Amino acid sequence: MSKSIEKIEQIDLSEETSGKASRASQLKGFKHSKPGLLFSIGTSAFGAFGVVKDIRKARTEGDALKLVNASVAALAILTSTALLVRELRRLGSDDVLAG
Image (cartoon, rainbow, N blue to C red; front, top):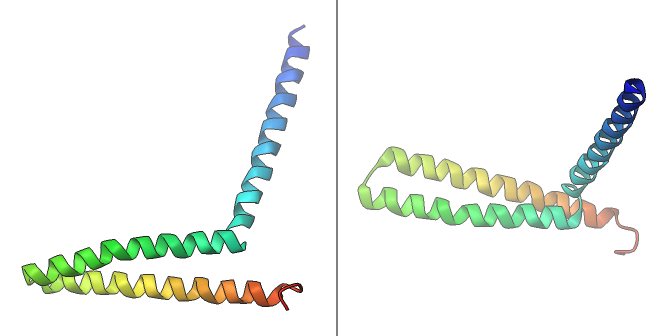
């Protein structure tokens, strides 16, 4: 009786892991879809608000090191957004129906 229970548990575990694997692959595919890229651009834009706040705070305090740190963060956001826009354009050019 215990062997049959172990087999049932093994079957249940294998079904759970295969379900999680397919879910994970779906989420990985979302990153390279149009909605996923737009979501990433939106989160980058949202992060820009924090960088602007840091730059203003560094200027009012006169802290050069904080200003350099915030400027580097702003450049990182600009670069990542430019890469996302390029990927979005490539995704659009690969679409046969887009023209």
